[in-house]
Picture: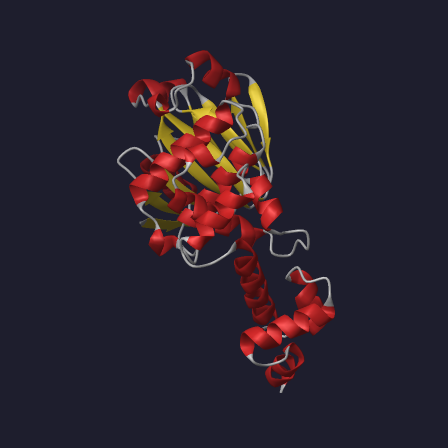
Length: 302
């Protein structure tokens, strides 16, 4: 795992060129700062979490001639706004969106303010899609759906700071990311065939953690979001002696407990954690932690 923090545009250009492909950077910000964390999953597949201030990043014909590369990069946008410009097209970036660009052709990335994203980098030959089809997807928002959601969730789970990142087998995750990207560019909604059971379990758990506040989150909706049967979902959790319903309930209660410890009101902590019935929440909390939510709330405020 490599990590870089910079406070100059020239330093950022050097960091990006080292992490991705040779690039140039411009910024009018008088107090520019940026950082990246990169996880190399295989000799040719990497994930990089990027945070930066307002900037323009570009790869020119001259840089391509001097430093030819045949990589595909995918911006999985987390916060802020931006745009990917390539082949006279522009893909607008916002939280939850994604765009593809090709290191073998000139491109520009524009970020008008603070932003955060994860960049997936893979060799072009790893995606079994024709050259024309791939070129037509660059500079456009990638099609949404289950495969893209799974790709973004798996990328988040793979980066440092996620509770399960120590369980990851990097070559398996690299293969899964490539398979999911292939499904995205092919317009497929199928997720399960792209993942082995271990990585699918990790992706599903990450999805649940991201949607705990949704009171409609339940095993059936999780299965639908990943285009798998409820039976397969239950089988995946059973491998670790768990069930989807129990996992969702436990994670909701843990989230509510964190909110209460932080001083949040009982009713709001319950609602933010996906409980829409106060009595159900109180009983479940008491069973899980041996103390009522109001007692914990009072002890924190004392």
